[in-house]
Image 1: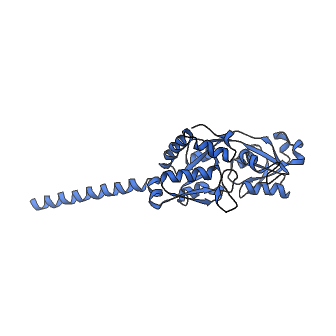
Image 2: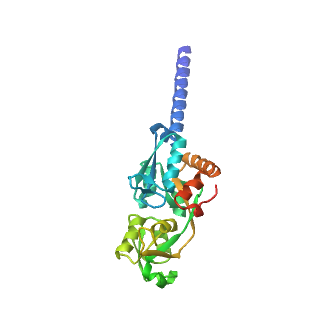
Image 3: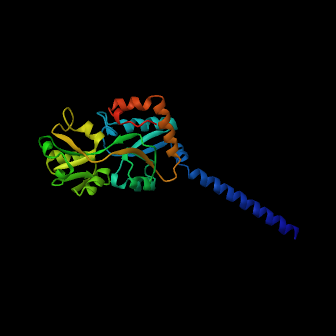
Length: 264
């Protein structure tokens, strides 16, 4: 009888150790910060979106978001890898683990906030209508825009505004493609972020024959992580510190988005 009790106690002890070990392993695997640190890389989901994320002449990803992501990677002690994604599938990319965050001038819509854990907002933005320069006087109100055919980035805040206002539209790969559609005459107009419009259309830009007219809304940018990710609070702390020491303002001035910056 004594032997049976000893064996039972030993088995119970082994089970406790096993459960403790499993619990410990689970806690570690649930930490996105630990996973990123272990693999040594933070994979950032982006699209080609000047002035937030775009390639310079050497092919390197630069921009306000790109530079801030690199600085965040340095704080974590890891390299940053940029992965161009289909914007319409950003939540799926995140949940599948193919990317660690979505950091690309992402508007904090209700849909985004329900699908991801989002950082504190860091930039103000708006959706604006883009039309050919020689037609700007004809399109200065929402009602006047309703006769146009729009190009919008699929899954974007621009697409939400097209739906909300009853505009006829076609979804394209990204905002740069939407501008190309208007420049080529295959779409009458586009809806893109105001920060991109300031950098990409008008005199001295890549699209001198285009301009922005009607402001459709007001919104804020944030960074998205998987639900329950501990990287969200890491980034919020980084934002607070980089704003306090002037780093965020310096990077914003470099890409001329300082007027849109939100204090942390």
